[in-house]
Image 1 (cartoon, rainbow, N blue to C red):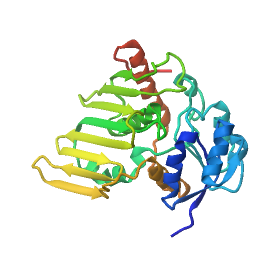
Image 2: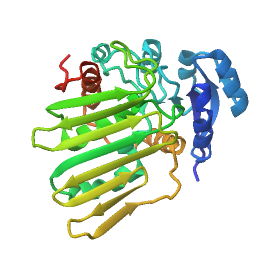
Image 3: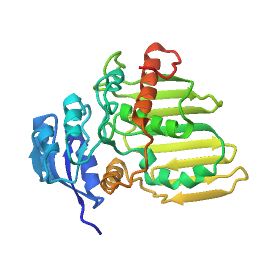
Image 4: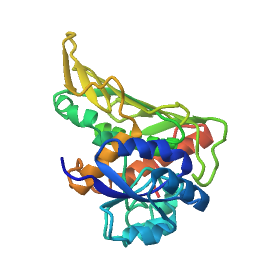
Length: 312
């Protein structure tokens, strides 16, 4: 087995279990860790028994690591994005920028200069489903459910994850209708501190339909995809895919693990794929198009009306 990748991480204190779980994969070795909160950085470095990183920009320009992982919520601000753009080492993030989407879309890379992890479209289960999708025929209905605990992800990051799949499978919708619920109301401007649950329905030009439910109130990590069409039913999770044909016969691919690996293991797997440059290809402009879909859903939550895809 190859030596583990040397990782530096930037995280919140409550993300310690995710970091520790990622380490159990044997794929990565965290050699330094910091946090937006210096006191939390001290506690994380003690718990992980590694060097404390006190400044993200300086850490990203270090030379001892193979890849950096920014996990802390709301840490991908303007300063962090600028530092990523000038780093000569790959950077991955599990968070999205806290600034308004329309501002991000004015940046050359749509405000997303880092690799996003863990994306479901890069998971073993979705990759295993590629062959089935190629022969599935017309896709008529897609449903995506992504839930986690607050230490594992944010609903905004998972909404991006789900919209990425929708765009990949069905293209851009005619309109989206969305609602947000949770203990903290959705703010008219800004995305910092976003929590709770999103429900989204989308209609497409060919009469296909899609629904999404994402939440950081689910307690544990779970991502599922249901695809319906004229060739039957396809069910996909992070590890496996099952195609039930119209006649009732089933084809399975991937590894149907009884105990889901969770966010930490999936991140470790994708960090390794980034360094090895074997990630599934992404069409040019994808990130901006996905952000537009997310923003359309957010606006729909605020207006209570169906919205078309925004035009900056």
